[in-house]
Image 1 (cartoon, rainbow, N blue to C red):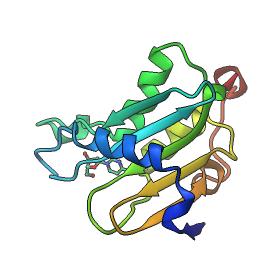
Image 2: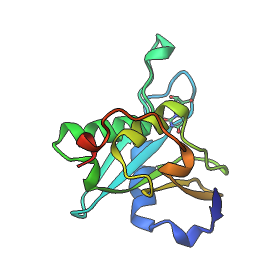
Image 3: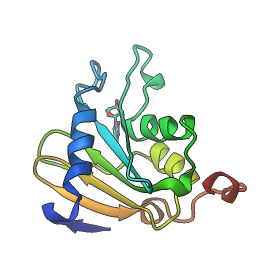
Length: 142
Ligand SMILES: O=c1ccn([C@H]2C[C@H](O)[C@@H](CO)O2)c(=O)[nH]1
């Protein structure tokens, strides 16, 4: 796990993740999160957290984004990087559920950037979830 400086996260990806965070539905946690997936064709697919009165049904920004990409017909191999944005001074690491879902689709060296107004961090999905559970993963990734 490495901490990186502001300049290392592509500015347009942070900007798109930040825009996505403004669309979050987070009345229970008051913790809006945005995610931006960079595709190999240059397109960017975004997601935000969508909470629910039945708390456990809430969906994180990262999963909203990756489910959207898959629903639009993209494959894991079309995804070049993941960028998360959270307002405030601290960049957070993705939750365990999102790590498992990202690992389902992404190559293990795919970069995951976490950004905020004060801190930026970077890992690969393989660093975030080493020795991930896998079941015929290659069919989904390609
Ligand atoms: O990486 C993260 C961490 C948390 N959340 C959401 C889930 C919940 O709606 C709120 C508080 O945990 O933030 C995300 O979307 N992504």
